Amino acid sequence: MKVYLTQFVKKITNPERNPRLFPSEQERCGAEQAVAEPVHAGSCAGARPESFHLPVGRAKAHYVRSMFACIASRYDLLNTILSFNQHHAWRRLTVKLLRVQPGQLCLDVCTGTGDFAIELARATGAQGRVIGADFCEPMIRSGQSKVRRQTGGVVRMTVADAECLPYASGLFDVVTVGFGVRNVVDLEKAVAEMVRVVKPGGRVGILEFNRPPAVWYRPFVDFYLFQVLPRVGGLFGRRDAYTYLPESMKSFVSREELAACMTRAGLDDIQIYDLNFGTVCIHTGVKRMEPRL
Ligand SMILES: C[S@@+](CC[C@H](N)C(=O)[O-])C[C@H]1O[C@@H](n2cnc3c(N)ncnc32)[C@H](O)[C@@H]1O
Image (cartoon, rainbow, N blue to C red):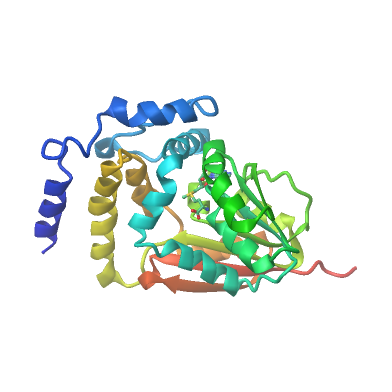
C-alpha cells in the first residue's frame, strides 16, 4: 500500500511529466527574492532535499528567516492546503484553553502572517490589545492587510526576535506561539523570554507539531511528511521549505521535554492536549506567582 502510494505521489509530482507545475529554480525564486532580498538576502533554494541537513546556531536563524521570507506570499495558502484547513481551529482551541478574556493584553511570538494574533484579538475584543511579533519582515508584511481587515486595528504587527523580546517583564496577560518554537535556535531561551514578559498568574500557550505517541500511526505520518508534503510544496515551487518542516519536526523535543522546559522557565500547571493523534500538540502553563518576601 505504502509503495503504491509513494509511486502515485512520485508520478503526479514528477517535474518531467508536469513541467508547468514545476517552475525552474530561477523562475521559482526570482519573483520572491525581489520581495525578500531588500530585507534578508538568503537563498530561496535552500538545501536540496536529498542532502538536507538542519543548520544549527546562527546558520539556523539565517536559514529560517530566509526561507520564510521566500515562502511569505504563499504561506497562508500552503498552510490551508497542507493542514486540510484545520490550522485555524487549532489556534482557536488554544486561545480557548488559555481562557483569554476581553480587554486583555496579549503577545503572539513567531506570529508569521498573524493568524494567531487574529484569534487572540477575537477573544480580547475591541478593548483588548494584541501584538504579533516575528523576526521575518516579509512574513509580517504579507499578513498585515489581512490582520487589519479582520481585527480593525487592535493588533500591532512588529519585527522582533523571540529569543530577545523588546518588552518589559510581566507586561502581558497571555503569550502564545504557533508552529514557531521548533524554528528558534535556542528553545530554552525563547520559552524563558515568553515567560519573562507574561504577568505572574498569566498564561503561556505553545501550539506545535510533535511525534504521535501511537507507534502504529507513525508510518502514516512519515509518509505524509516525507513523501507528500515536500512534493505538494514543490508544486508551489517551495520543495525545500517543505523538506525542512518534517526534518525540523523529527529533531524537535518530545511533548514531555517541552513540558519540562516550560516548567524550568517558571510555568506551573502544564497541560498537554494532543490533536490529530498527537501530531499537533498544545501545551499551556501558568506563570508562577512571585514568592512573597
Ligand atoms: C511556521 S511559521 C508560523 C507562523 C504563525 N505563528 C502560524 O501559526 O502560522 C514560523 C514563524 O516563526 C518565525 N520565527 C522563527 N524563529 C524566530 C525567532 N527567533 N524570532 C521571531 N520569529 C521567529 C518565522 O519567521 C516564521 O514566520
